[in-house]
Image 1 (cartoon, rainbow, N blue to C red):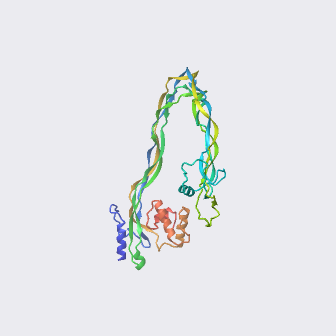
Image 2: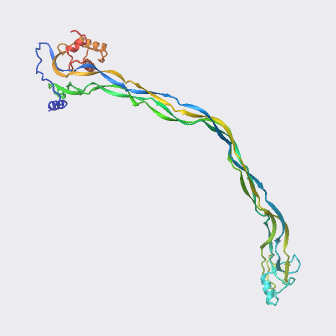
Image 3: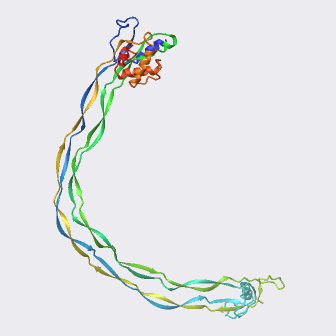
Length: 460
């Protein structure tokens, strides 16, 4: 079963479109002591030359420059501007009395300035007893227990000059700049745009795809000593040569180029910012004045005669007096705006200068010259005849010994093919070197043929 499957695999490797002439089952005219093998005779090729385009035809373009003449031109050096003049504001002074402490009326134990105040409860008790508190005039007296009235000093900000408006003239500012004057006007120029090329790799067929017979291995032979030759038709891909070809990417042409004007630089005064009126708000001027205000009102309470009285309470003897404290004033001076500031405007005329500039008389022209294409001769291979199978005389165990194998290994090594260790043993390295030598030199493959021995200059 293993032999049959190996034969089946080998048959599947042979494309149906490739056939070889039938070879007889036994070698023709064979003599005793000779060994033959069914080998593959490789296909034959010839070398031919082909003409290949490497640079396409193109054009060369040359330009006749434009012509110009000189003329005079008037240029503005300093632009028209304006100047502003300030008329200042006018102020006047006024005086004013400011109340720093208001008038007050309160009940005290006596008319003395340092006497203690009285509580509401004492006033109610006095009123119950018939005292007309409402219509009392300063100087009426009662008695009470109290905690004293407390003041604190605060600072009040008084305006002595109101907020006002001030005009400030910001003069025009200039800077010296380099002004570019058009000496030669802008024009159109025809220029040559040379052809551009690119190198392309062109794949040229040197040798077409082919099929060759290769000897297969039957696994069953190693397992049970079975015989039987397996040949496999193997497809060898086509061979190509890469040629670097120079082709026109863009043909030569001309293009119209905008030639910028020729400019001349001169120094002129340039207005940066115009004169302007800046309105400034001046804040009001204030002055701090200290004032006394009530911080804590007095607290009062009635106590029964003989009751314990806490130390915080002061016994007034139930004497109350209505005391009036006049208001206090302070005189201050204020600055008042009488008339606002104003601005006067003055016009400043521009200045000029005459300079020479260039004018276009005749535009540029172009002339075209053709460039011929370039070619190169390329060498490649063409098949003359197909590969085929044939019986060829080979070395075998009957006519092969260590000395012969040493000759083969030395000959292969001399021609640059590595047979492995040169030891007179026909190993894998020697088989690989022989097969490569046969293929490189279009010799039959599949065994050590006498044709191969002749090519290696080996005499038996």
